[in-house]
Length: 315
Image 1 (cartoon, helix red, strand yellow):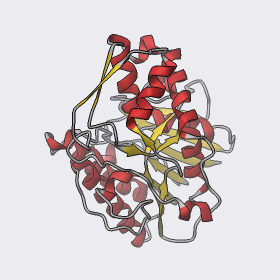
Image 2 (cartoon, one colour):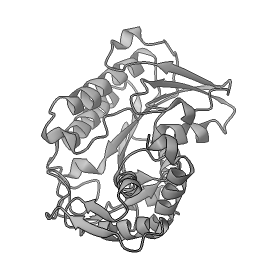
Image 3 (tube, one colour):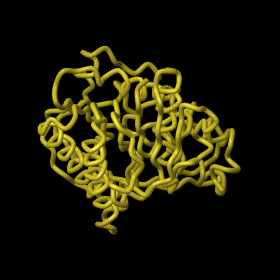
């Protein structure tokens, strides 16, 4: 029986990962989450193989429950507000750097074999190469990106000390079942309350890549089988989509024909936003992973999820 810890496991990505892990009856799953953004409803709490702990990961890791001989830690807990760092310079540091360092210390103390870290395409800032490979220069344009890069550095350093093996995944935006924040959520919510107009940050020409959570989870689970102390993978899509086109898909789904798009004007949605996010996934392909769900289908999956429970999701 393997022991597996998922931090942030009650959130969007974490809960989908746990659902997949629970299909293997040879794994005990432990979840650390303070429910600041995660939801208990996302977890199969009646499953005897799942144990949930409500824990603030900014607390002393020595006070966390002891789970000895951990086979895997999937560290997904983070502040996910990419925009907020322009005004708030502390939250990303605390939630994405200090917490990651504490989880590394906890992994070492509990003899973790493999540490999986959720990083971000934001570490590339404004890259010069598209699709952007893992070897690109990392010039930071946001506090969020800087905090994720610092987290990567801690994970790599602990791995070089032979405390554990690690896999680092640089994500594009994830969408699909369980989606809890991001551009599709924002558009849907705005249109619920004001269907005649939709404010779009930037000029609408920003091009982004999106990844359905089913593909992303398969990537996380299939790409940890490597021989290096640390390996870094981009998890993205071969496709990209214009934000205005995404808005039109949302409007079509909601059967809104006359919505006026109001743009904020810049080629960026906010300071630190990259006008183009398109990651090179060639390395992941060499390990046998490739996304199967198109971006348009992923958007529809997301809208289906939001529509099914909109009274609670948008409360």
